Length: 68
Image (tube, rainbow, N blue to C red):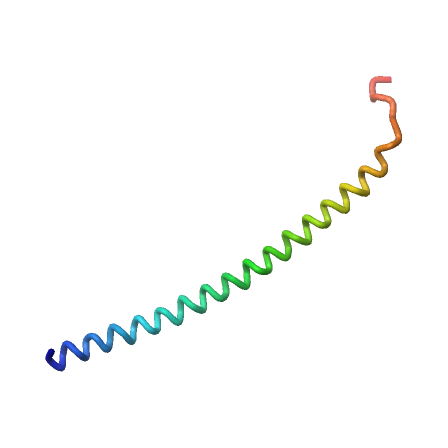
C-alpha cells in the first residue's frame, strides 16, 4: 500500500468514528425520550383506571331514561 491510500483510509476511519459518536448520542437521547413516554403512559393508565373505578361507584343509582 502506498502512503496516500493509508492516509485516505485513516481519514475514512476518523469520519466513521465521529459519525458513530453522533449516532450514539442520538440513540441515547431517544432512549431517554422513550423512558419518559413510558412513564407518562403508565401514569395515564393508572389515572384512567382510578377514574373508571370512581365512575363505576356512582353508577349504582338507577335513573329514569331521558324520555320520561
